[in-house]
Structures are given as C-alpha cells and as structure tokens.
Amino acid sequence: MGVFTEEEQELITNTIAEAEKATSGEIRIVVDKHCEGDPFERATGYFAKLGMDKTAKHNGVLIYLAYEDHKFAIIGDSGIHKVVPENFWETTHIAMKAHFAGGNLVQGIIAGIVLAAERMATFFPFESGDINELPNDIVFMDQQKTV
Image 1 (cartoon, rainbow, N blue to C red):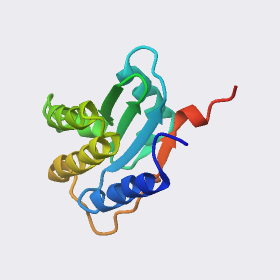
Image 2: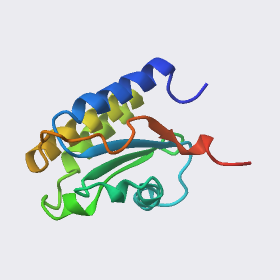
Image 3: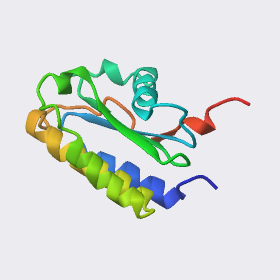
Image 4: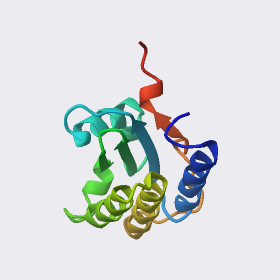
C-alpha cells in the first residue's frame, strides 16, 4: 500500500478542486518517498517537468512532500512571485509542518491546499470562464521511476 489510502487520495484531490473554485491559480501535489538534497530544488525540477510553468497567468503552486525523509516545499510560479510579499508561503509552511510533526500527512497537505488557495485568491481570484488547466490528482514520483 502507498502512503495514502484511496479515500485519502480522493479527499486530497477533492480539496484541490474545491480550493480552486476561489482562485484562478492551479495547485498540484507531488509525493516522493525520498528526497536527496534540498526539497525546494527537487520541487522546482518537478514543477517544470509537470508543465506547471505553462499556465496562462503563471500562477501554479506545487506542494512537494518526501514522506520518508520528512521534507517538503511549497513553490509558486513567476506570476505569483511578482505580486506577493517575500514571506507569502511562511504561514502555510508553518501550518503544514505542525500537522506533519503530529504524524498527519493528509491533514498537513489539506491545510497547505486550503491556505494556499485562500492566500492566492487575494491576488488571483476566480474569474468567470476560468478553466482547470492542470489535473488535480496527486503525482507519486516514486512510483513513476524505473528500476
């Protein structure tokens, strides 16, 4: 069995869908078992690999989690960084870390999704005709690697 049950995966993807109703931003979750080195650098690589830098407003957000190594990162695209303060992700990071420290990965990810969407809605509110540019499913990178 993977790190999340089917029910937990569905809860996370439904939370993304619901959160994106408040913002034109796009949120993705990427999960790895291990992360050698810096999680921010790993997340940045996945951001590009998943085409998240190709959204119309460059307002994609990636939440990356390496569950065995207890590492995670939150990154946003260039459109977000042009308009938000430098410590924009700090509150989200703190809330997620508190859940993770208590052993609750699912609630940590959900907190990250909800807080990211709430914060992004200020700068990137949902607009009429907005389309879902990226899938809401969780990307399990450790399951995509070949042995």
